[in-house]
Amino acid sequence: MKEILERLKSFLQTNVGSSLCVRSREQSLLKRVRRVVAELTKEYLIFTEPSIDEVRQAEEFLYTASGDGMKIVVLEKFERSSIEAMNAFLKTLEEPPSHSLVVLTSIKFRELPQTVRSRVKVFDLFVPRSFYEDLKRKISLEPELLLKLCKADFDVTEYVSEASGEIEAVHFEPSSFLSLFKSEEVKPQDKVHALLALNDLFTRFQAGQIDDRSFVELYVALVEQSKKLELNKLIFELSWLCEIVLEHHGVNDLSVYRWFDSILRNKLLNFNAQLTFANLLIKFRRSARR
Image 1 (tube, rainbow, N blue to C red):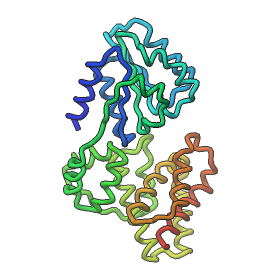
Image 2: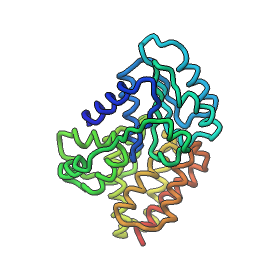
Image 3: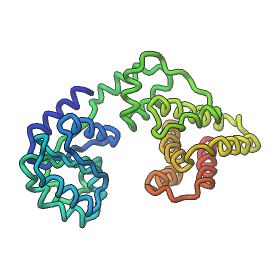
Image 4: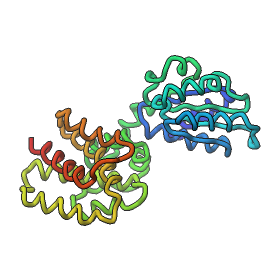
């Protein structure tokens, strides 16, 4: 991984005065661009899906003198910005100041307009297949399942690849499960434990070990113990973990995946949290029992 980021760093350094696009199939891998940029200069701004006002702020920042030798603006998920924002930035994109870099990051490069694509130099950020094959051989517990999580979140990839001991099996229990989500940002090791716990819950649903009464008791316990947590955030985290478990078990009901995706796309999280939490557990259970 260090070698990959060094190549990216070299690419950025040799293209000062240009506009670049770092593209990858893994959003979590693109987050590493921030780390590389911070190593190059102290003068940088990062915008995600920038609005037209943020694009103008980026231009103003770039066109002032640098006290650190270089200024960098990173525009993440630029393909999701409005056409107005993209058009307002085209001139700067074509000819950024000589002391600066404009860096776009994208997992959907083809969704950028041709007017943007034609103005950037492209760097493909990817992890060789051999890396994941070697990682899979290292995982003794649920290697296929954990590999799916690694491919979805590179923080987890680094944690698993650097783990000194074996990852242990996890039994789903409401209080210990919810404790994994207490921190403002869920740690990689907690994501691993949460995934294994959800997988355990799925297999218990699948085996019919939890009847209707036990399911209601489980839901009540989870709701009661989640009162100290931000429920919307919890639902968001659970949605993508549930998708990984369902995919691992070969669930092919597209309506279920669309439902989870609707949660993940809802950036404002403006849904009824209690009802959505109940539906999440119900859909997870039904998928296991089919």
